[in-house]
Length: 131
Image (cartoon, rainbow, N blue to C red; front, side, top):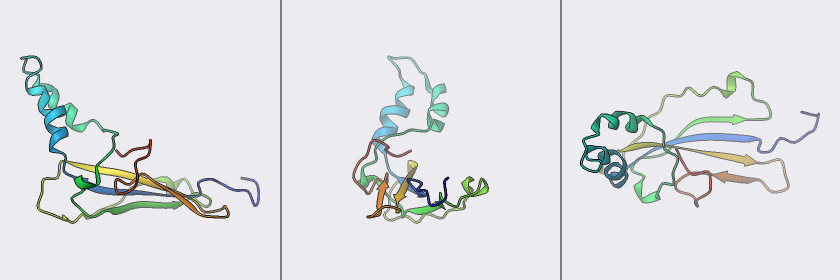
């Protein structure tokens, strides 16, 4: 980066929460129990571990949100880019936890007015979605 140069975005964070999503589980996981009458349940374990990028309805959130990682991209080293974080989520209601949901925020704070783009399920939907 050129001295006094700008890096956009210049800050990033990753967050974790848990969600209830019985409809997805029934539609996409239990679907394998009978595919046009054939028992394909052997596919279910693989389907359960496949990451899903989709939008999450805020009503599905059933735990607090935990920040897993935060970095200043202007000063980050290669080691800073490794994400290895313990976490502790607390239930917000008595419900099933069907999935962990990752989202990220990036901040553009070097301009005249700082702007944060959030992919949190609590924020307005973006094309980035959640994982």
